Structure formats: C-alpha cells, structure tokens
Length: 181
Image 1 (cartoon, helix red, strand yellow):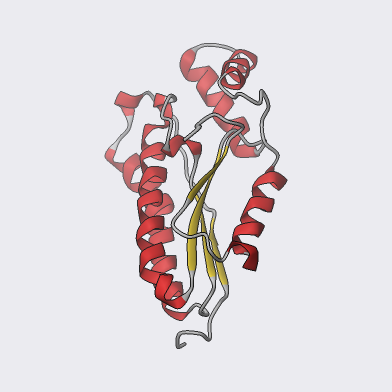
Image 2: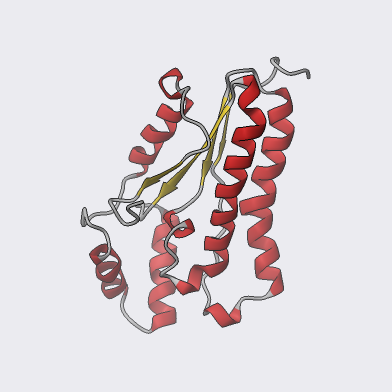
C-alpha cells in the first residue's frame, strides 16, 4: 500500500502487566512486558504509519503509572508505559507533516478485569485484604472513585475525531486527579 490508501486510525490498547516484588522481576518478565507494551505499538506505528491515510490519528493507551510509580510491584509495567509516552512524542513529530496526530491516554484506576487481577495480586503480595488495598488506592484519587471503561472510550473517540486535529504529541491523564500535571 502507498501512503493515503490505508487505515485512518490506530488504537494501541494492548497491555501486559505482571505484579511482583520489585526485586523479583526476571529478565524474561521484562522481555515479555516490553514485547507487548513497547515493541508491538512501535511496529504498528512504524508499519501502519507508512500506509495510513493523511490526517489520520493514532492513540496509544499508556497508564497513570507512567507518571506516578507508587506501586512498586508494577515497576516494569510502569517503565514500559513511560517509554510509550516518549514513543508517542517521537511519532507525533514524524507523522505531523502528513497531518497524522499521535496522542496517548493515561487511564487511572479503571473498572476492568485487569484491575480486579491487580487488586487481588497486590493484596496477596502485601498480605492485606482486597478491600483494604481497594480503599488505600481510592484514597489517592481526589475524585474518590474509579473510572468506567466508557469514560476512556469517549476520550479516545474524541482524539480520533476531527475536533482533535490540533492536538498531537500529548499525554492526557484520565485518572480522577491522581496525577495533576
């Protein structure tokens, strides 16, 4: 395919997380997490970016963990999502001449099966109850609630729309005020 004849948008939403004590991560853990969270979006942006229609849009799903790494048990995941922010900015510059926008969304605590897994594993690693870890995490969120997946979907939809065509290279937190900067 030649430029201008391909897809109009790309959402890089895959993510792999493993929770361990920070000292227990293995080389294989790092390789596996980086393969999904960094390499896959890189190759998709590289290959699809060449053939994407001019004035298209790319949205990368990062995480509030890229800005706040208070959960040491997710250190490798957080570092991969931080790398995704740098990639977002680099691809935003590279694709800007064709009018293609590239942005990142940084969800906070979202009600998903992945979040349920995180809470259970953190409770196990810290030897506390799921209710206690849930309460402690919500205490860090100024809006005092979790997010619904539809809230992230609406932000992504906006970033893919013509209304967002002057927004590129940005990392937009959607975290109830957890990371205010």
